Length: 235
Image (cartoon, rainbow, N blue to C red):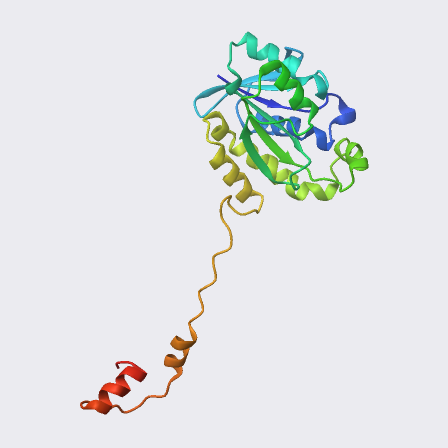
């Protein structure tokens, strides 16, 4: 069994916040696939379903972001899951809007929801970091994170959430690289690991000179013929 966790703050007040993009991802997965209705358990909203033949538990902790690990830890222990069975979706300031990266383990990057899960569940779970961009000034971070997505943001946000839901089965089957590439392509980015093709190597000045050299009637035999053939090349 796999657990897919979306992080956010509960309540209508926070519903459109950038900090709630994890909730949004979980909601879109729930809409796109045959999950049970949301119900309350483990101080969370949970739903059961299946992705690519794997049983999946969707979880949206309702403890407020900073205590998310308490809820996730309860569910993990109840179902006797390992830390590696968990995948968490959350907002990432240090990624440009619409960018997605998946990693297992590592630090929290200052994210309080991740700190809480680390403390209650261990660190070796998959982290799906969803870029919301940085406001450029540390003093503006709180307002940025707890601010709502702008109308213009939905040009990349909606395709991103749809792509996450469409490809969630790849996370359930433990294929994060393909997941990242497909999501990146869906939101108009380049496939990870790809880059601009190297430019064709310019011809050397010798090659250019030979290419541009006028045609010369070269004698077929004799010393002069041998010398001219060395200068202009064999025809």
